[in-house]
Image 1 (cartoon, helix red, strand yellow):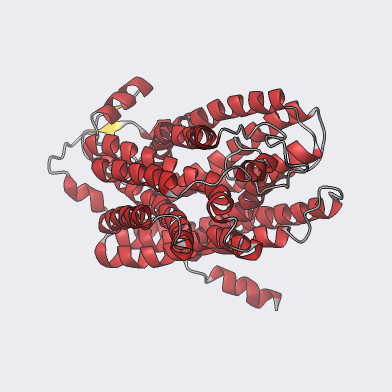
Image 2 (cartoon, rainbow, N blue to C red; image 1 turned 90 degrees about the vertical axis):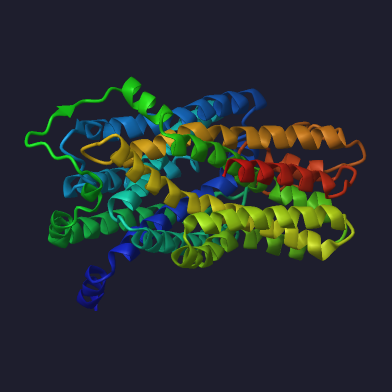
Length: 486
């Protein structure tokens, strides 16, 4: 039985093995996003000053580590060669797989550091966040870079992304399983659950990277030796190649002349803001706009669907990408979100079911668009390779530079959203008891970004109700900005 299972693993398609890496990230990351703030606030009793100091340091480190790790990984690939350029060689792919085999298990170990109190809450909060984000960044950079390195055609890249979305959806199930063991008073069961998830991730990373390395060593080198797709873009050939090492300043100057890159990061910045705005305030929208008109079970159902539906819906979007192309699908999603926002604005707050559809679909379509944009970055990697006549494609570095420009969208989403909602209601969500007539504040659900404390979200939702017009205006403005840039 064991030998048969091992034989099946060796015969799995490369796209399936590559996509499975998303499973071993998502089973941990979804649990982390849902519980780490509540753990430090409710269990470890972190004070507000330490929380904000940790968040400030983390936000700075979170923005800088993507280009830093990308530069450390790909700086050797930035040499130019006047005789032409080559797409990623087998050595480059094997290097990325080795990095994943090392950083994947370390990422799982850093995940466990959150669930055991081993230092002062403020110090542990800061160290755990920075350590976890560092290994997560290394895994994401090399995993995304392989999307450009393993495939050249849009069809093959779409296939790779398809399995990533499929396994990410499966990984989201860890959130539902975690509900059965989450208990602030008795943390033992939850810790055992997290250990099992981490072990599964470690084994998965080790096995998947080993299978990909063996697969690539067996038949990948022959494939790359026969294919020279991007070499056809070069006409002039010199007998003796002349290489020139590129410095960081020169690389940044090259990016500043890359017009498609500049336009894309502008679009992606607004899209990332929109995506995280939805992620942060989705539970708040449900309770603030619909708390008097839908049941608790309906709200919980919509919240649970919001975790899985974007991944499943992205599978359909990728099938459309194969038929119509990535850019046509992304543009269509922008117009669809704009149309939904206009309809919701005109309908008003009395159409409860329409409001439910609007809030859920807006999150699903926005998340789906964000996931498709990785395919656009792979095209930018190819274009950067051709325009600057590089010897190798600096995939991880370009993904890191995109993240450097777009990460501020993650920071400003909760800040601007918090300010807008506080401006409309007059309540500060960081006040423990903002309402005098409420004796006990129920605990809410933590959002993707830690700027909103979970127990404060539910208290904030108890304030005076407002119409959905404000939310529709904010979302419509974000979408219009997307359309103008795209």
